Length: 228
Ligand SMILES: N[C@@H](CCC(=O)N[C@@H](CS)C(=O)NCC(=O)O)C(=O)O
Image 1 (cartoon, rainbow, N blue to C red):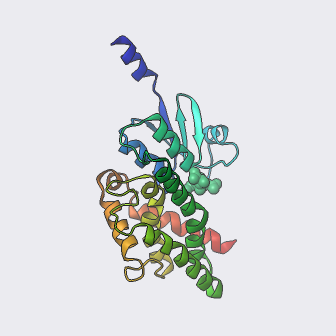
Image 2: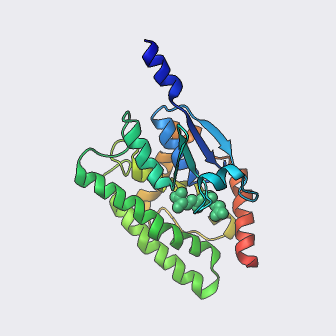
């Protein structure tokens, strides 16, 4: 009994994050889905703390998970770490091939989908048309990945859902700010349905940034992109 108590006391989980970061939310969602208690340390990305710079000196970005004093950076690596450290409510399939595929789609989201969507919103004129076409090509792969499934993970939220959550958070905000439609229900019915089901899921919904905070954050980002 005393040993178990000491083990619980020894577990220290901290998360350095910025409240409206859709990438940082991946870690929040994963920890909450697994029922892990943690201390949230709010980071000001416009005035980075010594704590952040000490724990992520290479990328200097959030999120950073600190587990028993040891920092882990890069959200997709943090998700892997969480999955391996706390086995309950798995977010990855047990089968090695299925697991590799989940990792593939999560990486595809960051390598291809994320930059192409971002360019679709910040470019202008002909460049914007090219960027939107490229974003649509990438999104079609995700649309196909959802065929016959409720979530990317099947019946339950998995790694690819968590990794793709930024789509559900940012796209409608950026669409409203820029005045263009990038993901519409006719072209991407499965993705639009997924965004709704995902964002309505209990743990996800309870940890969703307020829309007005997202509007002001992205409006500032768009302004800084256009003034550079
Ligand atoms: N590849 C990183 C991306 C993290 C990232 O872009 N974080 C943003 C917030 S959403 C950040 O810290 N930006 C501050 C900066 O770029 O200086 C990850 O997956 O963790």
